[in-house]
Length: 346
Image 1 (cartoon, one colour):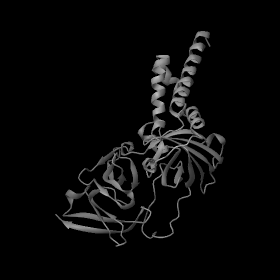
Image 2 (cartoon, rainbow, N blue to C red):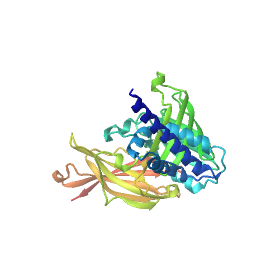
Image 3 (cartoon, helix red, strand yellow):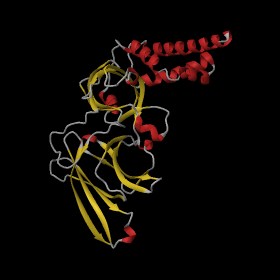
Image 4 (tube, one colour):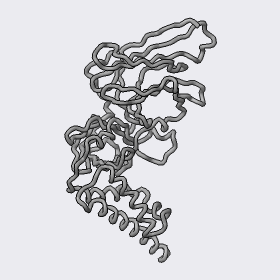
């Protein structure tokens, strides 16, 4: 390598590390740090890079994909400092589905190697579920006949740990033989950096293991390709333990083959997906109504989704509808108890 080019590369690396260290000292030097201020560290690094190097583009190219180094620096600095974590701030991470934030095409988003969601944060203890491969993890929506004794899929594992200052240290395990540790660094509502260390892996080779440090973001409606949202049948509501959510009715289109089918989700007000209201919806139908009521009188709000066959509607003398009754359980998940076929004359 040319000597001058080598010096420039070293200079950029030095600027990167120096900026991170300076900003870290500024934020943790006082002995306390809030959940939200961790994200500000990155912004400070960007500002410092301009002052020190006057080359933001070059700095960013050097800094790119260095989440692990930044994570370790932040972790070493933050560990041991007392903080007063507010429960409400931590709850901002609950129930969202977290996927790896990669610069990939939409059609490849479902190949994400690791996804998870946090089910509870209570007295400093955090619990959740994760999935390695097999697409994006979604909380189970059970079908008819499975009211009690639900068994989770083998590919869905559990994690549990505790908040240690700003770092959340967890163990994870699943029925496929994966075991290990996960360290969470909470940056902001839309970003979690996770260091994954497999102790036991079901992967056939070490190269296939998921060890590494990743940036995760919430799974959002905008990630779904060929979705058409029905504004008429989407609305905000209070839904028991879910709190204030949005019920989103939509349809997914297969542009190549010309067919479509209905889908329904619970999201937060920013469109981050919390739950898929899954049933055996029929191809060629669309959501025509959504009803929220306590159908089985257990004190919890249930959801009835009515779908209308539209693909052959012009050729028939009546409308063919199906009502899918999804009953809510105490933990917030739903099960499909029954479906009722209906006909209405035109």
